[in-house]
Length: 143
Ligand code: HEC
Image (cartoon, rainbow, N blue to C red):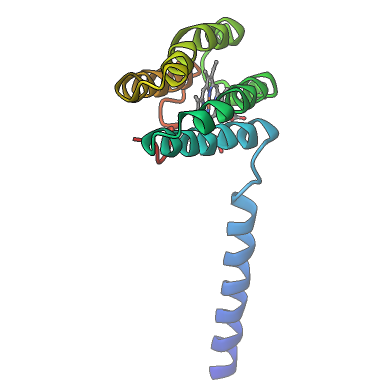
């Protein structure tokens, strides 16, 4: 009897492991680019906080390229709205809008404008996520 119980618990443990490994799907290419953009945003924010605008400015185009690649590679299944929004124009609006304002502030070495424009830029990241019906995607760790 004892043996049967311990066999059962081992079997349960095995099944649980199998189930959890199945449910955690690896990130898509698009998700990888986006989370890279998120990391770069945090790094650039830290440089700017330390008044190292030069290094922050160097990360900016790398970050923008990751956002672009993330958008371009996003699978149809990533979009939860029907009809799907025009991602290309949302991206263009981000690039020429809050992203451009942020890089201008960095170029000017203006600490206050950099802080303020970063907040606005993050909001524009988030509004694209809202437009694809996924407002729960957060730009993480960047305040
Ligand atoms: C023009 C639209 C658009 C803009 C702008 C945009 N994103 Fe995204 N983002 C997406 C899409 C589409 C996905 C879903 C990708 C997928 O599920 O494959 C996504 C997903 C994400 C994710 C989730 C990744 C994961 O591992 O699940 C993060 C984090 C993210 N974006 C961060 C950012 C940051 C930071 C910015 C701004 C610097 C940004 N995004 C700007 C469209 C956008």
